[in-house]
Length: 129
Image (cartoon, rainbow, N blue to C red; front, side, top):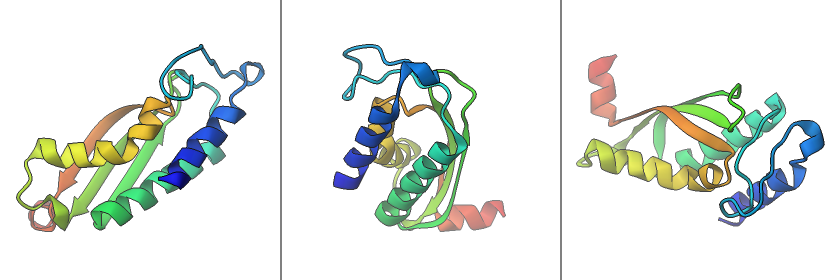
């Protein structure tokens, strides 16, 4: 939890209007709503942080996260995950468990949208392969 909060604080401190970032007042936890001009190094850092958190918390057997940063409101991501923890969970519960792990980035506006979220069990993954 502390690493996640530190990442968000660091990203918030790096946001400056002179570099194309928009920081309106009193939005979400950090006062950050929209991001533009996010660099590929920043995206890699964010994706690595999210990937590590999802792998650890959900014991992911397979995990793919892709991003698109061309939206001025923040990054869009697509997430594909295979985990045994999804056994006996419906689709909504599975997605809620993933959203819980990326909520800080979403609340801060770093991630604007999840374009696709596929959560499968290992047996479901085997039947689709």
